[in-house]
Picture (cartoon, rainbow, N blue to C red):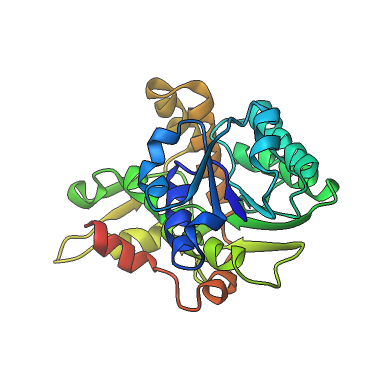
Length: 282
């Protein structure tokens, strides 16, 4: 059986949809805090179990008959997130799970500018040290977040963002979900670490060039990160503001410039490109 944690989130639901095209619903376990959030899958025969990242015991019982687990990283940050991931890894080991897939981030390290990459570095170490077979998907930034970053740039003609000339191998969340479903149901992924992103990386100069159309141009204005962080802090909780400012700084330093053919190989087709995505949300 294949189990998925955080199955009611965007990535979890998308992965479930693709898995249903590849295996029987009764061989899929969806673990969520609130089963009412995924009744559309229980109605299709998917086994839905209630579990909380903070409750290791609940995961032990939920994973007893599971061979492969997709650990979708929790939405917490810092020590809380690592503790939650540790609970799931320890429960999987106790329950007899053989293989854990984990959703990580590019260039995880203890001194990463993008704070979640610190959490992912620590979790990757826990997973590798557990002795369980692992597959790590270091997922790049979602194309899906671009509308939030771009704001009204297409209308105003200006994009203010502190990323310099740094590039990102943006990837559509649905493409990650399909690749996960393909890998979860195939062989050859034991103890592999995959950089998951487009084969091409794009700068914000490339993005505004793609936004410019019908005679209207969009200018990219590289602003100081300090000014960006100050503005974020006026509107967002401190931890989230710090994370977003760190993401921009990481982009500038090319921490997300991780072009790789792996995603295309896992999909068996080219992933959705920047131009295609921007046209779809125009």
